[in-house]
Structure formats: structure tokens, C-alpha cells
Length: 158
Image 1 (tube, rainbow, N blue to C red):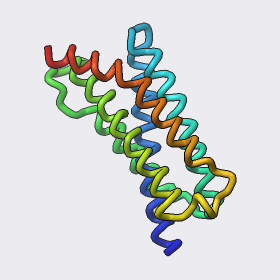
Image 2: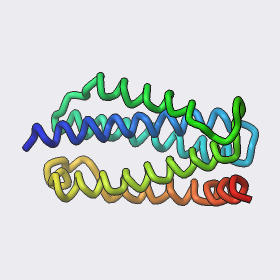
Image 3: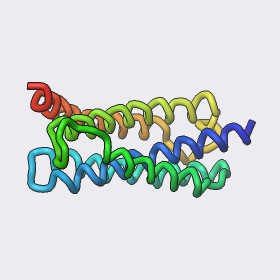
């Protein structure tokens, strides 16, 4: 059972790293715009969640798989080359896609924290981890990004 938990944790770490990189890139890209503050705050919070998640992995204990982690970061970088309706420039669809992907990642993180707490029974095994607080933090991240996501969607599809 711990072997399967280890695989699951490494898969989730890989996804978290990809979302962290996406959030950081989006925050850099939107410096000086109305999207900067929510993206910068979300990027910081997502990075903190990755650090927290690594702590959970150490407490279980499960070793991080550097190959999976590296492939996830590489996949995020390759995703930058997907079509966006423009040949060589950033488009409003790119902004919306970034915010939409981050929102999906945060929703997935809420599922992750619940799964670890309940299905994997880490809520009982890891008394130092406050899964309820992690869920509240994810809700705050989602609320922070939602107005920007809605605005970006309106701009992309107007």
C-alpha cells in the first residue's frame, strides 16, 4: 500500500511543480498589469504548497522521484509552444488559458488534500499537518484568481 502511496505522491508532486512553474511564468509575464497582483500572490502560495507537500512526503516517508519532477517542469515549458491564435505573440487566449489551468490545479489540490487526509489516512498518521488549513488556503487561492480568470475570459472571447 505504501508503494502505491509513494507513486501517487510523486505524481502529485510532479503536477504541483508544473503548476508552480506556470504560476511563476504567468506572474512574470503580467508585471505591471491588472493581473500581476493575483498571479504573484497565487504563485507565492502555490510555491508554499509545494514546500508543504514535500514536507508531507518526507514525513510519510517517500523519496521524491527527480525524473518525474524534471519531466513535469519540462512539460510545462513545452506547453508554452501550444497554438494561441497568434503566430509569434502572446494572445488574450494565452492569459485566459493560464488562469484557467491554475484554477483547475487549485481545484485538484483541494481534492489532493482531501484524499491524503481521508483515503490515505494521513490526517491520523501526520498529526502535524493541518489538512483543514490547507483546504482553506486552497479556497483562498481560488478566490484570489477567480476575478482575474473571469476578466481574462471576457477579454479572450469578446
